[in-house]
Image 1 (tube, one colour):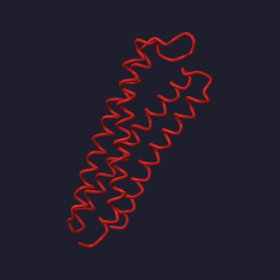
Image 2 (tube, rainbow, N blue to C red):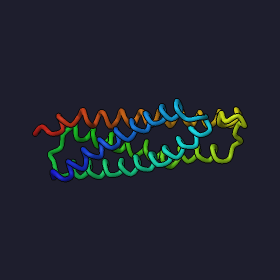
Image 3 (cartoon, one colour):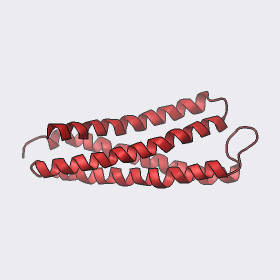
Image 4 (cartoon, rainbow, N blue to C red):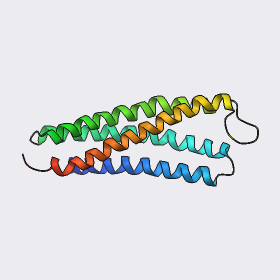
Amino acid sequence: MRFIRAIHDLTLALVVGGIFGGAFSAVILFREAPSREVAGRVGQAIFDLLGIVVFGLSLVLLASRAFLLRTEPPSRARSVALALSVACVLLACAIALGLTPAMGRIWRTAPHAPDGSGLVEAARVPFMRLHGIANLSYLALLGCAAAIILLQPADRLPR
């Protein structure tokens, strides 16, 4: 049981840390890269990988949370944490299997501005729409993970 609890807690830490690390990397990348074209290409590669990793971690989070729910006395906090874990999986799935690949397709196939500023305006609009939805999804995922972390003290109290 301690091993599963450790896996659960480590997974939460990796999800939260990974998303924050990706966000900080993107900010620095777009500030320091020689052009938006380079920043966009590297950023797309980072977020392609981050989406898949967060999806995998969210599956581990859900599995460990479900196991803990079965082995510990039921409580409202534990049930809410399970529901939040399901939300994490759904959000991560949407990011990894829907939003990020769609952004990647636009990035790879749409025309890019010759001045190195990234996508041409006609392609930038749908790309940025998906980008905004992906950012909101990552924020929602962070919110769910933070709520699970905050529920932990209540979760560990005996009933």
